[in-house]
Image (cartoon, rainbow, N blue to C red; front, side, top):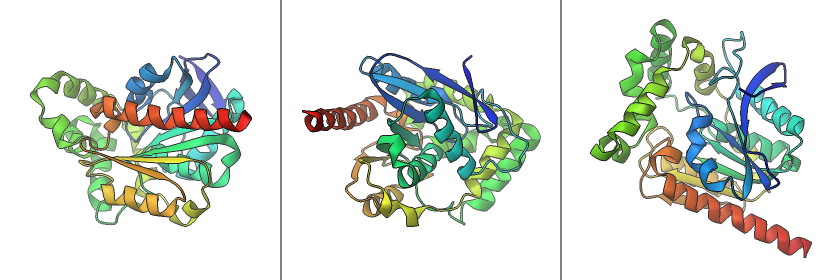
Length: 275
């Protein structure tokens, strides 16, 4: 297990190494580096792929605070990129990872080559969601993830993945991973529920930005992606015909093709500027 001391904590990360342009993958709530396995497998031959677990999740250290806020996670990402000496990077963030990526692109564009936002939003958590998510979080804190696994699976995955009889084994694997979360995951969940919006910062983003959303995402509906597209100048929006809130594992072929095309275009443009 590879750990890095960053911003007063210990972060677990995985690094394919190599001389390729670096990509940093930042996962969504309740998951870890495994969320990007299909993308790392597809891109590692051309890029240096670095994925990491947020503090309080996966194999990273758990802080004592009751709320792991987005500003702290943003500082963690800065520390990771700088300590590894890999700037500027392509930054790929899904949901919570997107909250971090938008802050980086707005405030520290020197660290980024480009930004990819998957299933995310620049707004606070909708008030209509807060009571339900707070209750689920309380149950998970007291009894672990097993009692809430069914409703959380319906939040995290789209109907195509959940209903496909040929993907029963995959669903079982991800359900198991969901239930492997420690009881102290509640600290990270609080950070998402109580997060501040960042919409007012988005028009200042100038790094090339790709926004991707699956049509079946019920946690961050496609309209949220449309709003990001409107606010981030020059951004590109791709609405996938299938996929929910964990689209990297639900529709890996669609995501890999979209991501590969975008990243390769950035490489070509960079080479053209140098030439």
